[in-house]
Image 1 (tube, one colour):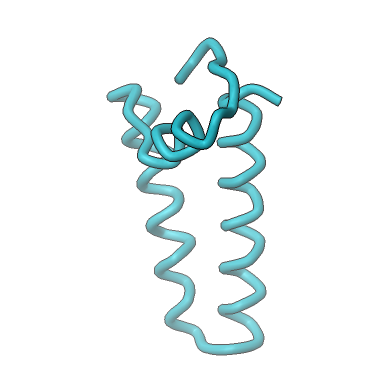
Image 2 (cartoon, rainbow, N blue to C red):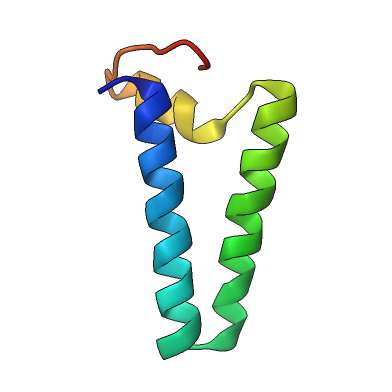
Length: 66
């Protein structure tokens, strides 16, 4: 799995997790969804993603975008 696919999988997991936490734990977990969305948006424009940096250090092979 490349970093690109790992980032997409991680972002999707975080969005789904935040929705579940918002519904079953506390409504303020919706801010986790907002954070993930803003991070995806800024990485689309800047090409910088903090999660990609962490995954690269963990040895995940590079992809085209990151």
